[in-house]
Amino acid sequence: MIDNTISLVLDSLAMVDIYKERLKEILKEKSILRGDFTLASGKKSDYYIDGRLTTLDAEGVNFIGKIFLEEIKKDPSINVVGGPTMGADPIVGSVLALSQEAGYPLPGFLVRKEEKGHGTGKLIEGNLKPGDVAAMFEDVVTTGGSVIKAINAVRDSGAEVSKLLVVVDREEGAKARFKEMGIQFFSIFQISDLL
Image (cartoon, rainbow, N blue to C red):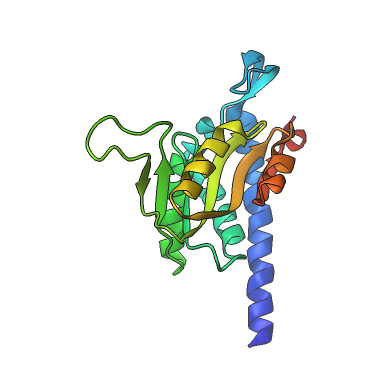
């Protein structure tokens, strides 16, 4: 029994490495843009990572979902997944579908930039309850400012954010910032892996 478990873990790790290699190719092909850009942080950059070109690609989001699900399974306290709307939307959908297929079903949620002005007026849509322990997703982080608003909304709702999983970390301070907030940080790639 123990040998079978070890074998399954090793197979899973080998598959994650294969997914990462193909995902790197997709990101380089579709999402790394060169030019003159202003980032959400206000900083100027000679490259831009348009993560949605990969997260809205069937193959790309499937690999992201598989890698993130394997990472989430390492922490059995996580019982819900979500993130800020737009960047996290396709990732949340992928992880939800894959979690069901894997017999590890997770509910999900999305955090709006601002409360709706109609209907229920919700800031958080979906299946987040007080006391939940969440993993949150984002496609790309620079300093982390955008996702911090979403994390604060989740915390204000009475849930906990245990871990932030991102596709690409631009290596401009986000990792340290989330560590200070007591949130585990996982990125599939650092920008230095892709340029």
